Length: 182
Image (cartoon, rainbow, N blue to C red; front, side, top):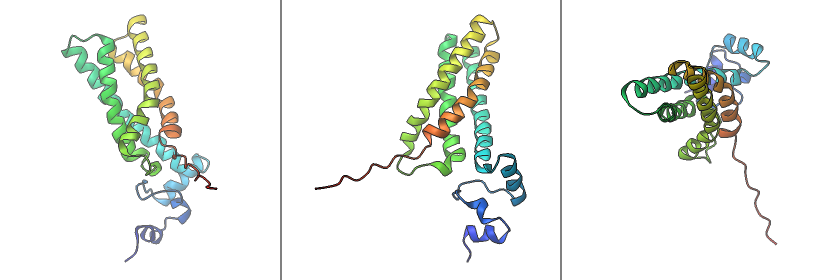
Protein backbone atom coordinates (compact mmCIF):
# COMPACT_ATOMS: atom_id res chain seq x y z
CA UNK A 1 0.00 0.00 0.00
CA UNK A 2 1.43 3.39 -1.02
CA UNK A 3 1.79 6.26 1.42
CA UNK A 4 -0.04 9.57 0.89
CA UNK A 5 3.08 11.19 -0.56
CA UNK A 6 3.68 8.27 -2.93
CA UNK A 7 0.08 8.45 -4.08
CA UNK A 8 0.44 12.19 -4.75
CA UNK A 9 3.67 11.58 -6.66
CA UNK A 10 1.94 8.90 -8.73
CA UNK A 11 -0.76 11.44 -9.56
CA UNK A 12 1.88 13.74 -11.02
CA UNK A 13 2.47 16.19 -8.20
CA UNK A 14 6.16 17.07 -8.25
CA UNK A 15 8.14 16.26 -5.14
CA UNK A 16 9.48 19.81 -4.96
CA UNK A 17 5.94 21.11 -4.53
CA UNK A 18 5.69 18.89 -1.44
CA UNK A 19 8.88 20.21 0.15
CA UNK A 20 8.31 22.03 3.41
CA UNK A 21 4.65 21.02 3.66
CA UNK A 22 3.06 18.85 6.25
CA UNK A 23 0.17 16.52 5.61
CA UNK A 24 -2.10 19.31 6.85
CA UNK A 25 -1.14 21.66 4.01
CA UNK A 26 -3.64 22.09 1.22
CA UNK A 27 -3.02 20.08 -1.93
CA UNK A 28 -3.62 21.84 -5.22
CA UNK A 29 -3.26 20.50 -8.75
CA UNK A 30 0.31 20.74 -10.10
CA UNK A 31 -0.57 23.34 -12.72
CA UNK A 32 -2.23 25.58 -10.12
CA UNK A 33 0.69 25.28 -7.68
CA UNK A 34 3.06 26.03 -10.57
CA UNK A 35 1.07 29.11 -11.55
CA UNK A 36 0.89 30.31 -7.94
CA UNK A 37 4.63 29.65 -7.55
CA UNK A 38 5.26 31.82 -10.63
CA UNK A 39 3.02 34.63 -9.38
CA UNK A 40 4.62 34.62 -5.93
CA UNK A 41 8.24 34.21 -7.01
CA UNK A 42 8.54 30.68 -5.63
CA UNK A 43 6.46 31.27 -2.51
CA UNK A 44 3.26 29.43 -3.40
CA UNK A 45 2.82 27.98 0.09
CA UNK A 46 3.05 31.44 1.65
CA UNK A 47 0.59 32.71 -0.97
CA UNK A 48 -1.85 29.98 0.05
CA UNK A 49 -1.31 30.94 3.68
CA UNK A 50 -2.20 34.59 2.91
CA UNK A 51 -5.32 33.51 1.01
CA UNK A 52 -6.36 31.24 3.88
CA UNK A 53 -5.69 34.01 6.43
CA UNK A 54 -7.84 36.42 4.45
CA UNK A 55 -10.66 33.88 4.17
CA UNK A 56 -10.54 32.98 7.89
CA UNK A 57 -10.24 36.67 8.72
CA UNK A 58 -13.30 37.34 6.60
CA UNK A 59 -15.24 34.78 8.59
CA UNK A 60 -14.00 36.28 11.86
CA UNK A 61 -14.90 39.77 10.58
CA UNK A 62 -18.44 38.56 9.91
CA UNK A 63 -18.58 37.23 13.47
CA UNK A 64 -17.30 40.62 14.67
CA UNK A 65 -19.87 42.56 12.65
CA UNK A 66 -22.66 40.23 13.74
CA UNK A 67 -21.60 40.76 17.37
CA UNK A 68 -21.40 44.52 16.87
CA UNK A 69 -24.86 44.57 15.31
CA UNK A 70 -26.31 42.35 18.04
CA UNK A 71 -24.85 44.33 20.94
CA UNK A 72 -25.74 47.70 19.36
CA UNK A 73 -29.31 46.63 18.69
CA UNK A 74 -30.21 44.47 21.68
CA UNK A 75 -28.17 45.85 24.57
CA UNK A 76 -27.68 49.21 26.24
CA UNK A 77 -23.91 48.76 26.40
CA UNK A 78 -21.75 51.71 25.33
CA UNK A 79 -20.14 51.53 21.87
CA UNK A 80 -16.62 50.90 23.27
CA UNK A 81 -17.79 48.02 25.49
CA UNK A 82 -19.72 46.17 22.81
CA UNK A 83 -16.89 46.71 20.33
CA UNK A 84 -14.51 45.06 22.80
CA UNK A 85 -16.91 42.13 23.31
CA UNK A 86 -17.49 41.63 19.59
CA UNK A 87 -13.76 41.83 18.92
CA UNK A 88 -12.86 39.24 21.57
CA UNK A 89 -15.49 36.80 20.31
CA UNK A 90 -14.22 37.20 16.75
CA UNK A 91 -10.61 36.91 17.95
CA UNK A 92 -11.26 33.54 19.54
CA UNK A 93 -13.03 32.44 16.36
CA UNK A 94 -10.06 33.68 14.30
CA UNK A 95 -7.57 31.82 16.48
CA UNK A 96 -9.42 28.52 16.21
CA UNK A 97 -9.75 28.81 12.41
CA UNK A 98 -6.21 30.05 11.72
CA UNK A 99 -4.59 27.59 14.11
CA UNK A 100 -6.44 24.70 12.49
CA UNK A 101 -6.15 25.71 8.83
CA UNK A 102 -3.87 28.66 8.00
CA UNK A 103 -0.84 28.06 10.22
CA UNK A 104 -1.20 24.34 10.92
CA UNK A 105 1.96 23.42 9.03
CA UNK A 106 3.93 25.93 11.16
CA UNK A 107 2.72 24.71 14.53
CA UNK A 108 5.64 23.96 16.81
CA UNK A 109 4.85 20.87 18.86
CA UNK A 110 6.67 22.43 21.82
CA UNK A 111 3.88 25.04 22.10
CA UNK A 112 0.60 23.67 23.40
CA UNK A 113 -2.77 24.91 22.14
CA UNK A 114 -3.39 27.21 25.13
CA UNK A 115 0.02 28.86 24.72
CA UNK A 116 -0.57 29.45 21.00
CA UNK A 117 -3.91 31.05 21.93
CA UNK A 118 -2.18 33.37 24.39
CA UNK A 119 0.51 34.21 21.81
CA UNK A 120 -2.24 34.84 19.25
CA UNK A 121 -3.70 37.43 21.61
CA UNK A 122 -0.41 39.42 21.73
CA UNK A 123 -0.33 40.59 18.09
CA UNK A 124 -4.12 40.58 18.04
CA UNK A 125 -4.10 43.06 20.94
CA UNK A 126 -2.13 45.49 18.77
CA UNK A 127 -4.60 44.90 15.94
CA UNK A 128 -7.48 45.23 18.38
CA UNK A 129 -6.25 48.56 19.74
CA UNK A 130 -5.77 49.78 16.19
CA UNK A 131 -9.25 48.54 15.27
CA UNK A 132 -10.78 50.18 18.34
CA UNK A 133 -8.99 53.46 17.64
CA UNK A 134 -10.07 53.56 13.98
CA UNK A 135 -13.59 52.37 14.79
CA UNK A 136 -14.05 54.98 17.52
CA UNK A 137 -12.58 57.71 15.31
CA UNK A 138 -14.98 56.75 12.53
CA UNK A 139 -17.94 56.54 14.88
CA UNK A 140 -17.32 59.57 17.11
CA UNK A 141 -15.32 61.91 14.86
CA UNK A 142 -16.50 61.07 11.33
CA UNK A 143 -20.04 60.20 12.53
CA UNK A 144 -20.07 56.97 10.52
CA UNK A 145 -22.61 54.30 11.39
CA UNK A 146 -21.22 51.75 13.83
CA UNK A 147 -21.01 48.92 11.27
CA UNK A 148 -19.24 51.11 8.69
CA UNK A 149 -16.72 52.38 11.25
CA UNK A 150 -16.01 48.82 12.41
CA UNK A 151 -15.72 47.54 8.82
CA UNK A 152 -13.16 50.18 7.88
CA UNK A 153 -11.15 49.41 11.01
CA UNK A 154 -11.14 45.67 10.31
CA UNK A 155 -9.96 46.13 6.73
CA UNK A 156 -7.07 48.36 7.79
CA UNK A 157 -5.90 45.99 10.55
CA UNK A 158 -5.74 42.86 8.34
CA UNK A 159 -2.22 43.25 6.90
CA UNK A 160 -0.63 44.11 10.24
CA UNK A 161 -2.33 41.13 11.89
CA UNK A 162 -1.13 38.65 9.25
CA UNK A 163 2.49 39.75 9.43
CA UNK A 164 2.57 39.68 13.23
CA UNK A 165 0.89 36.26 13.45
CA UNK A 166 3.04 34.78 10.70
CA UNK A 167 6.35 35.91 12.16
CA UNK A 168 5.66 36.00 15.90
CA UNK A 169 2.76 33.77 16.92
CA UNK A 170 3.74 30.86 14.68
CA UNK A 171 7.49 31.20 14.49
CA UNK A 172 9.48 28.21 15.69
CA UNK A 173 10.35 28.06 19.36
CA UNK A 174 14.01 28.69 20.10
CA UNK A 175 15.91 25.65 21.26
CA UNK A 176 17.90 26.31 24.38
CA UNK A 177 21.47 25.06 24.06
CA UNK A 178 22.47 22.30 26.44
CA UNK A 179 24.72 23.44 29.28
CA UNK A 180 28.25 22.17 29.24
CA UNK A 181 29.20 20.43 32.43
CA UNK A 182 32.74 20.71 33.76
